[in-house]
Each structure stands twice: as C-alpha cells, then as structure tokens.
Length: 341
Image 1: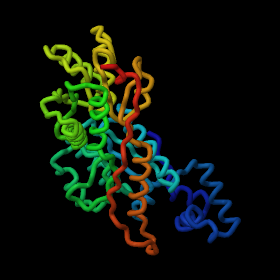
Image 2: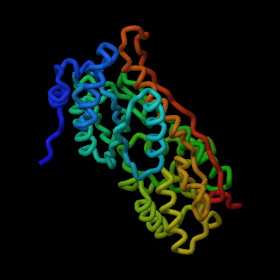
Image 3: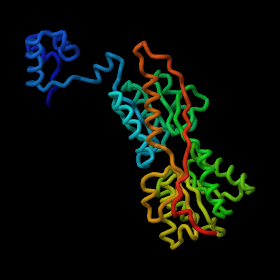
Image 4: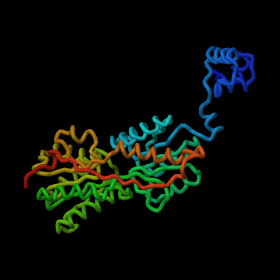
C-alpha cells in the first residue's frame, strides 16, 4: 500500500520545522530565500501535494460550490451547469455537480454529502415537493440558491423563468394557428414547473374563449424521451385525437415526435408539436421543433453570482439581500407547429 507524503515528511527531508514548511506553502515571502528553496526542493523530490480539503476546513472557506439538478441527461441542466461553472471559475471556485434523477431520496443523500464536505454553498433545483429536504439542509447553515424554481415561502435567493408565461406562449401560438383540441404531455405532478406550464396553457385557452376541456393532460412519471414515446403511444390510441400537443419539455416532445414518425403520423400536418426549454436537439430534430426557450446558461450564471455574493464574508461588503430573479421565456417557432388549419 502506497502511503501519502505529509508535511512532516517534507520538514524532515528539508531539515526545517513543520511551521516553516507551512509558511513556504502559504506565506512564502516570510521565509528566507535559501530555506524556501530547500523546502521547495524537498516538496518536489517527495511529490508532496497539500490537502486542500483540510486547509479549507481549517480556514472555513471551501473552494467548492455544489450544484444539484433534476436530470443531467437533460441538456437544459447541462446548460445551467455551464453557466454556473463559468461564474464559479471566474471567482476561483470549482463546481461539484450531482444529479437527483428527480428522486427526493437521492436529493436528500446529496444534500447530506454537501453538508459533510462543507461546500461554500449550493445551487439546487428541488426534487422534493414537500420541502422537507430543504428544511433539513437549512439547519446546516450553508447558503443555497434555488434554480429553475421560485423561492416561495422561503427567504433564500432564487433564479427562475416565468413558466406560467411560457405555457401561455406555447398554447397561444397553437390556438392562433387554428387548433381547438390540444393535449398537454406533462410530467411528475409534484414539480412546480409542470404545474405552472399547465396553468399558462389554460390561461391562453381562456383568453381565446376556450374551456379547460380543450386541453387533455397526459401525465408522465419522468421528463425524458422514453416517457415522451409512451405518451405518444397513448395519444395515438385516443379515439378523438387532438390536433396539437404541448409538452412540458423538449425531451418529451422529441419522444412524441418519434412515436408519430414510427406510426406514420405527419408532423405538423396531422399533429402540431411544441416543446419547452429549446435545447440544442430541438432545432436538429428530423422535424425542427418549436419550443419555448429558457435562458439556461444565464440562469446558472446568475444563480452562482447570487450565491457568491451571499458567501463573501471579508467584512467590507454590504449586507446580502436575498432576491428572486424571474427571467422571461421566448417562443422559438420552427416547422413542427407550422401546419395550416
């Protein structure tokens, strides 16, 4: 078994005290040039690497920011992570990315891990609709910012998109195109995003003088392509099949598109489809997908900046003020919804 080299080994080989080695590592200007050179030579010969985690625990200043998302298989969250990493790196921090897989149990375990590692702070897209995981994590005193979720009933910062407005954009577009019978392929009912997008869809129908019965909901247990294909199969089995479908995210929409293609149903002539998120694959689909765009990279960067602002504690900053940032979505129209009715 290979033993790691410690600071005492460096001190012994260099013929100096442990304190001198520590000064060379942390405050080199306080050590005489000849002594510093001897210590650095010993570090090089032994291959010593200082324990960054131990140093951070002593200083109480971790250089790691946690990021816990719902699904790293969804390119939307990859873009959120890119934005967060960009802001964190600019501040000299790294990001530990974890995936709850939409499972509250997984979420609880990762939040415990973040607490054990004493990360600087956490960016969190909650999977637990009850809020119990957040409440338990709050007791550790580690700052966190909610991402893709409004901080309702809490004092923490949040960065989100107006999903009610986004759902309305999608369905208003379909209604304006002449559709009067629509479906909503949703996701786990406990997710606020899914509920808010449905609310927006119903609002758009009401604006057009159409009742909620014009929107048939097809719930799914997950927000992935496989769930979209399953929803597409259910859609095909309906006797009075809707002429348009709005999906809670692009992965679901791509799954529905695959199901229609396999069944020989034309998109958009037989069925118009609108997704949500505007991931890269949306424009590259066999039938380019109309989608409600979320500024995911911007969302991740803003959330990280809010967390950094809160965790700065040099004694000279202004007191941190928690904020709720709500970004506006944008409809990107492509061929999947451009049927003439």
